[in-house]
Length: 314
Ligand code: BDR
Ligand code: CA
Image 1 (cartoon, rainbow, N blue to C red):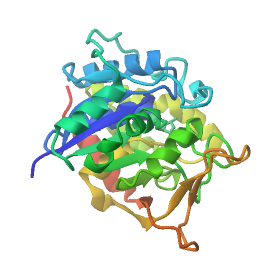
Image 2 (cartoon, rainbow, N blue to C red):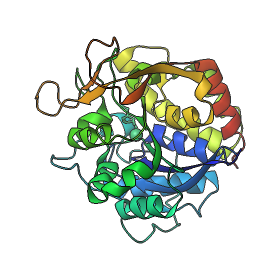
Image 3 (cartoon, helix red, strand yellow):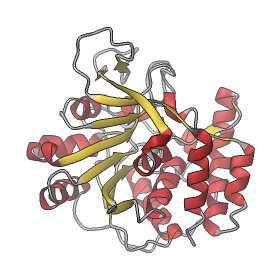
Image 4 (spheres, helix red, strand yellow):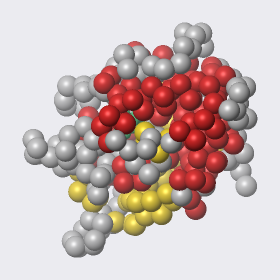
């Protein structure tokens, strides 16, 4: 089987970093055509820095990294330093990147790549607010039918919200962008909090990263140590959820995940419910399904896969 071509759209973020490392460690499954950065967890200047730090940590400095949108479509940027630290990648001490940012805007890279590659061959993997993807779809509507699938981390139904009582961070930051993406008619797979809150980095799982004895293993363990302090205080659970790697793991091992093909709409009007993913899990409307909404994962096999793949790097 040939590797699936993907573009990772991201706002690193420690969990974004692990998602990128998993993709780069899996060349037989995934061919990373490029990484497009967006403002989200931290401002764009830092997400472009962090994405390059991660590529260099993985030993893939040749990866194409692009800067994209520095703010949501029509709102002020909301960031999450309270979770990810001042740099977005707090935890390990990693060198400043030396690899260059590519010339050109991330949105143009998305459009050009989708027009150049065979129709139906490129999968988009958004791990942050959907501003870049929505901007590309608005600027070049012809790309929509050329996208194989969009597999994204965002939203929630049973878990409801993490940045507000009703919204998950990525969708909350740019709900108008999310509305465009969910309405684009592109095959969509959504990894919401309902799934990612089951991907908990327990102590034995974090010890397994550290026990790899590699730079990558140590750095990942330090990253999860860092953001864990926030999630443990917040949820009191047995470990922090590793959200974004669920996207790249889904692409590698979809059999580890289960969900329902349902209708999901994005709330943009309400103040209280801004960015809520209104997911018709129970099929109580006649609205047409537009997404595979994942509800569960096999956490033990997910962490086994992740640890094995990370062990391949440096
Ligand atoms: C999402 O928000 C960010 O803080 C994480 O990187 C993840 O993409 C979880 O709500
Ligand atoms: Ca993210």
